[in-house]
Length: 215
Ligand SMILES: C[S@@+](CC[C@H](N)C(=O)[O-])C[C@H]1O[C@@H](n2cnc3c(N)ncnc32)[C@H](O)[C@@H]1O
Image 1: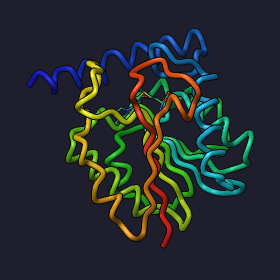
Image 2 (image 1 turned 45 degrees about the horizontal axis):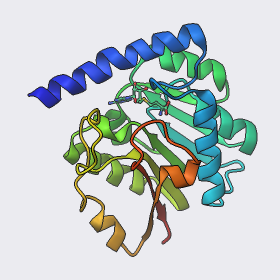
Image 3 (image 1 turned 135 degrees about the horizontal axis):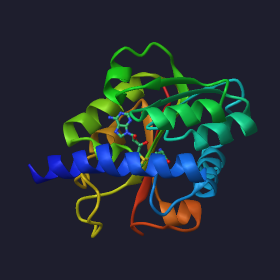
Image 4 (image 1 turned 120 degrees about the horizontal axis):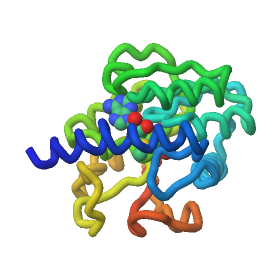
């Protein structure tokens, strides 16, 4: 009950306030402490770390906020951008930032349920914790079905329930990713975000999980 209220407050009120702030300040990140250049730094490191060739490929950002990461990818890697977000004002700004992008204003699960395209990079940054554990698994499974060979799912700001961070709504148990680690079709990698991005502004122990489809 408390978690449902916290989640509602987080998504329906706090995130809308961030969006409003972005609208007036062009901050670029739907977060309290991050800004646009933090997001650009992260997406560029993820592309380099995984040696992704995104030229003319499809990249999907689920919970894309104002489209900062998509703009970086399109400007630097000439890829095709797709972005989803619940908040109308975010999508409005994302469309302006990435005129070539295809955007959908709505719920991630609804979008994934009717998805036809295949992707080479799917971004879930700062978003997965908005969903209950069964829905986190459903979302991950649906994304993995939508990857092209060699395609990557990046789950950022992954937080475990044994961390001290108090503000994550649905942190994951330690064994959450075990099935993905065992899969023969997917390679699993997990790196501390301090190590990957060079700094952190939130929970120092948060990790980035990367699952790649290697049939
Ligand atoms: C913490 S923000 C992160 C935004 C962006 N990924 C970034 O790094 O700036 C979480 C985003 O997820 C979006 N979001 C949350 N729940 C969603 C849902 N069920 N469907 C679509 N978007 C959702 C919010 O509107 C918000 O823009």
